[in-house]
Length: 206
Image: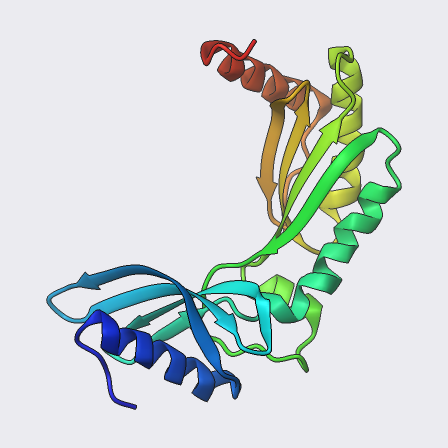
């Protein structure tokens, strides 16, 4: 496959390289950055597949014929997100929530035949979890609720980025791996909530 030396050629290269990799047709949704370096040029863009235009993903290529993308999120998001959604749905104290599978770009070609657990373990993908709790509760209540949620998420089989909101403010943030993560004590959870309060106060939000 011919390489590229400008943005127009890079757009064409990305579409052809992705078609060769996945056997599907793709379009450029949004151009990102074209960069020139001494050893090679690089280019990234937000892409869509013609057969699934509602799903956007990122692709990156270099003029050295490197190609990386996170298209495979499209294959595994439904099953991976469901793992966390099922946990959250059992928590009556959660007022609202969103769960979105995110993943870094990679050279590896993942297919529908691959196992979702292998993808989650090897790709660096993680569930981005945003939950909202009831407003105006005592600190100890928020600590207990966050602790209860974390205990379920630690062993759920996916990496997690958890953001907890209450009173229209972020009150807790923690990103952790599915493998070898040390569980937070309630004392540390409380410290993290206090840290978020201090940040919100410094920004004039409290």
